[in-house]
Image (cartoon, rainbow, N blue to C red; front, side, top):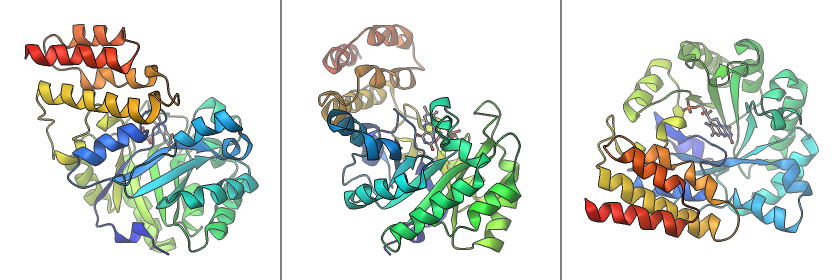
Length: 326
Ligand SMILES: Cc1cc2nc3c(=O)[nH]c(=O)nc-3n(C[C@H](O)[C@H](O)[C@H](O)COP(=O)(O)O)c2cc1C
């Protein structure tokens, strides 16, 4: 198997999967502005959706799995609760050229949990196990398999839950260091890191461990990796509005002009890959405005003007006018 996880030098970074955030356009920004690429994850995609969706819906759904050749390594993230549908969905995904497949077992979203998927699988370990073992044997030597989860459901369940996952021959395991109940409302429990790594060394030394939660810079991530012994760390909200995150060690030292130029570039990519094709509405792009446009006099007024726009062209026009005044 061409297992990219075994080729990464520690400490490595991964860009967290985030629905309606880490789409093909967003990831392209990081591929263009990083010194070395993080491991990329797609937004999560429903295996039931892949199996049951028809024509137009299908194209929209599959737009979540678009990627470019700059975006490597890239892992497709899926969610679901029906072991058989994983096999059918993976059978389709297998031919898309991904470097790996990741199963979401941590999402607290109600619509996901209602299907028994995401974090709900922490409460049904037998189904989680069946999904992983079936997917593992289906993928065989073709593609590495990983899981992304949390430390427990209502309370930390390191031994039972993380211990179970470590017994299932995964190539990598990402652990968001919070319980489902905690959502993202409390600081991540980095104090569990060393215990998790000790378990990994005992149960499954070849499984790469990626820890996740609240990382704010490369320096912060590197320290957390070294302190816990993790192979890598994953960062999500810390990268909002900053495609140069993986090119800066500590401080965000981009000028106002650079931030505005990056936002223009991001809007253009969003238009090219997603908006112009009808895959995503402009409101999805607008979620990024606040993260790019802040930290200087006049940023608030610019944000307000941008939030009133309804198309890539109108937003870019405003941003170019601001640049002319600088
Ligand atoms: C807007 C948003 C969307 C997310 N979507 C996903 C997702 O599709 N799959 C997933 O595994 N986690 C998802 N997450 C969780 C993140 O991957 C990550 O685990 C979490 O934000 C904690 O990391 P952070 O503190 O660095 O942000 C999402 C988080 C946010 C904020």
